[in-house]
Image (cartoon, rainbow, N blue to C red; front, side):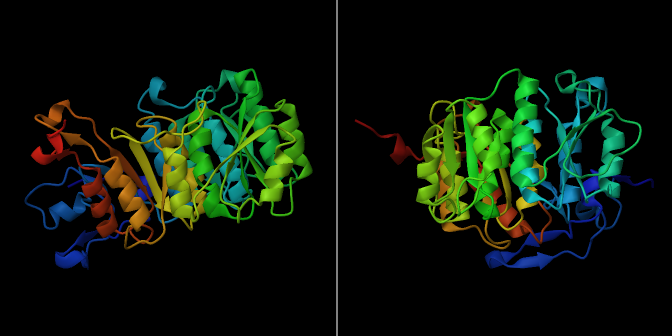
Length: 396
């Protein structure tokens, strides 16, 4: 029987299928081939070959790459199936996998009006997964980006046969400034909001990529020592914008915040660790800034806190479909109490008919070594719509 790979750019390198056994133990299934479709019930290992539960559960879908390059390719194909002209992206943003700062800032290109797919380059070398995805995506050309099909961000590969636009900078701060200027030109005006985060603590900066992809607000960087000249110049070009600092005091020092106040109004969004920092941003809402997730009925994206490039790879998931914030999982094999509590807070419920309810959905980014299938199962359960207990209906 002919075997058809499912999301080959992503899963071919990953997904050793696993299942959750009694008492929460992980049980490895001895089937590591990529998931396929057209599996027949008469075949051995049919359920494992279909890829469940690792590939998807009722409330989660996994982009199961073994590295950020594969995950970016898989996300791109999921967001842009490219089955016809309407489902092809206008452009592809090619980001450098060697530079997490440029990649996080480059996520702004996934926002409208460019609405680019995101792929990763290994410096000037284009990995096979990215090359294959670029060919399949066949970008149409983004009018707001000068008709470019490919937007090269930094010193990345230059594939032949596509119209390109280049965004360059001599360091991550200059590159973030250039991305800000490029996206402002595409939009026709500079954003009134700017997200500023740490150039030295990637886990605190990661959630910025999802917001940039959704909103088009640029991401700029500071250090513990102060505001780099390129960041200062970029902020000045916005004309005293609303500056939102993402990260606690140990990531962005109070003296840096005081200096930022000379360039605009400043608000800090923070949690004491990367997990709670991401949750704080997911809850936050002020003057159009923030996701405002305080109720059920949302999309969510989950990635490992120690994988900053996953933030850029996953960013297009926050710019379409179920539009959700990036949440960070600190350990592959267990959900932290803060994340569990947050998911309980926004868990959907119904009183009489679940069809009339709202639903949460989670994207899991990375293979089972990044986020185990057992942890995926826990996330699935916490996203599930539940019947509201009779005792909770009682009121004055």
